[in-house]
Image (tube, rainbow, N blue to C red):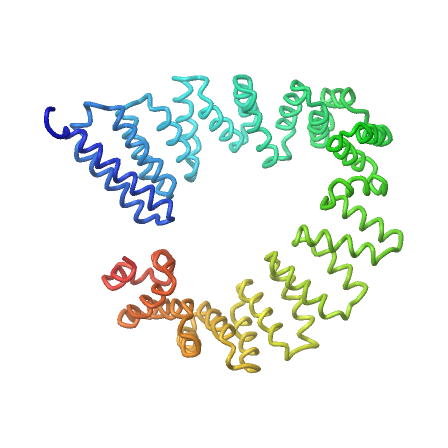
Length: 480
């Protein structure tokens, strides 16, 4: 064409632009605008199907890109349609087959459809690693373990680096002896004897009757803690610190409570929680409870969800309010709300005027869905300090969950009187207005909330509170 671009080029350019803009919206986490851009691309392609026949592969690739974008924002049905259009144009579009299969995997009860997609690729290209990997993982998910293992073996045979998929899988399914055995065989073939021995040990823990694995383990490492300790010391003498450390860890598995081993491990890795726990328990047995507490405290500092330190410390100091308080905080931070609540309640019994305790108790009750009790707890705070904005806001939130909208609205009104720049209070007020069908009140309140916290714009679109008004012009105008 001597002048300008062909119609096909113009269509391609328009589609590219829509896809690019969709990806940008997607990167910002704006799913709805992204969806609209991808749909625009689909519309352009659909309206020009006759022209597309001149370059089927190019436009097949466009449909695949659109499908991928729709899949990533959770629009699975539309994504499937896009992949099918891509395949109608080019049945050898392997990426479209694979991504169509991956989309089916994300849908409910569509595993067999997904498997068919991966099989279609493997008919055309038997060594396609993506298809093999997807097939192997899906077969494992379907508990067709033997078929899955055979597929993984094919992957590893054509590229040994694919063993990484087995490494990941054994972490997800540590109770599967066949996976551990496959990993053990790989490590043994690679000359990684210690790793092979560990893997065979896992096999035997899960399947004690596997005589082949037992013989392999005997060849690789005598199951004797004294030999293991001797080997570790020799490695240390040779300056092989990492290997020595791993040998000490193995020796400790066979000889727990060996203080020499524990100290060796902590010398190399002072944050090894298993060794720290062994040390703490050993100190306890020896009557060194204060020293034991130091080790339990280190464990908690590394793993905050482990509150053994507080339990042991409270055994020694049952009336130490500060320890109880910290235990409650630790439990709350680990989302163990019931335990935190029980701990705070013990303190409240003796310190009923402590506002912070009532705050914490209310927060636990709210997280547990015990909204009526939560509202009462925040009311206790307000009886002691009527100016506490956080307690007022929290009480309103609990009342909202109870459906007591008028009383909740009173609390939120008090909050914004005290501090007009509290976006969550405005948002809750908007939710109540929506529940009551008061569009006149909804518009200025929700607009105010969004002006202070932009994320409320998208949140409101999905919020159950606005479902009854989401199709109104008022609501659409606010969130557009």
